[in-house]
Length: 558
Ligand SMILES: Cc1cc2nc3c(=O)[nH]c(=O)nc-3n(C[C@H](O)[C@H](O)[C@H](O)COP(=O)(O)OP(=O)(O)OC[C@H]3O[C@@H](n4cnc5c(N)ncnc54)[C@H](O)[C@@H]3O)c2cc1C
Image (cartoon, rainbow, N blue to C red; front, side, top):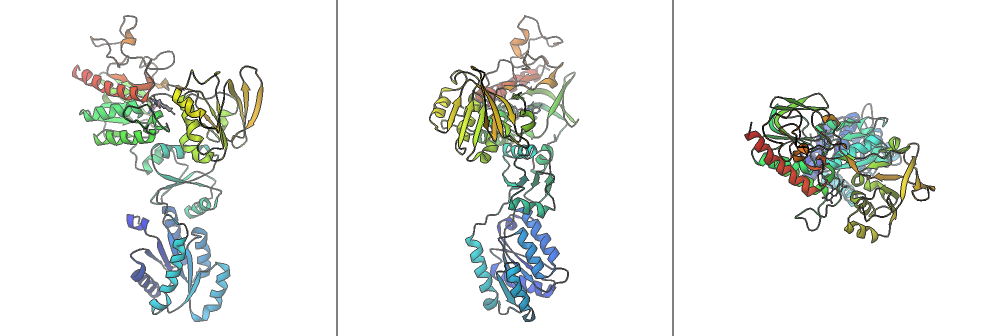
């Protein structure tokens, strides 16, 4: 039922139980308004309401509703009353016979009727069109915009609502966010037939409804691939940050049958950056989202397969075959693997934080949560560039931003250009020598206890949002016993594997490991996950490209 046409033209809905009359109204309406409006016809109040609910979920606009007064089961006034709950802005016309004029006049009060029309309305040029013209004019003068994109109805302080929004935002799926306790949110819940006890509700552009969806459900719904098309590839790249995207672009463009597997969303850490100022070729900076979008399109254009919401949980080595196992138990095999799983935010380990995560406490979700920070006093923990970027970004809408830094100054941990930007923004305060000691709140974050590291003194501040950027660590436990890692979990590669002059245990080739090769031949690592890597976008992309060159060398030697 959804066509580009149907989503762009507002609807004129006519409801009449007499098929002859119903067709005649629709015909007259189409004749004059058919080019600009979509005329929809229903033959009972119930089916009219069903149609309205479907249109609501799809984000269609409804301009005018015409209903016959005398209908069995549900009369026109009852219908218009319920229609008003779904589309309060639609103009309402009641069609009545002369004998029912009294009822029509009463309806003006009951359903705030805009007009009643006596049947028959011939000639329409005199009796129907002038009325509809007037109502359309007044409808058009109020603010109406279709909402054809995905809609998310949720609770302000629900961790899963926050997770769903972040997943959609990071995958660059446009969506509109509705609070479940506000009028339009409630209307959408009613239209979907849900009481709001289980949230969030995600309504796809076609009107399909998902309740508390997992990332995989969401990915499938919005058309992101989640399962590999083939069983065997030349190259599996694990992690779609800059290093993985770089590897996928070079792998696919150089003729390797390549699949890129990502747990959450393409872009990795870089995708969460509001502005990357120092990436070569972008003198005015580039947002992480833009860079990611371009890289993803580039990888797809060269034929790389991209899987989203697909977490890798094991790597198995069987002779020359490398098998990558996913969280759902399925697997894919390849001749070679590039590990580009980067790092993930380190958790803040103080009382109250775990319970309030997603309910006012966020890890790196500054972009998604920015709209909720308007006119609020917000706190950011961290003294590195990611914290600084978030402070600058959030200061645009927040009343105040307080940056909590453990060290005694920012100089040691943040780039000079960011320190200067922060100093120039009056609403940002930097509190050095300060740590969060505890977070408080019932349903959501309400206050923080802060401690001065020099004096040990504490104070309690009101806070509704805290963003945590306290460094990152690799999550590579799943490689335990397969690939050698350093004491911090970073993957050891190339010359570092043979630092003591020995080759890695079990190493079979009669050559030393290539520069980015791990302790398993044919398995490479690039970007932040690699031990001693530079932790920069440019170096991650460069290593991704270099790893592909080494994959070719490895495959030639097989
Ligand atoms: C807010 C912020 C701002 C930054 N700004 C800059 C900047 O201005 N300039 C700069 O040079 N650098 C910047 N950085 C650093 C830069 O983003 C990183 O160095 C870069 O993203 C590293 O790329 P990567 O591909 O190695 O790893 P990541 O970007 O960490 O990507 C790794 C990907 O692997 C996925 N993954 C992890 N485990 C699995 C698994 N088991 N299965 C499937 N997928 C998995 C993750 O979900 C992630 O998408 C910034 C970082 C942050 C957080």
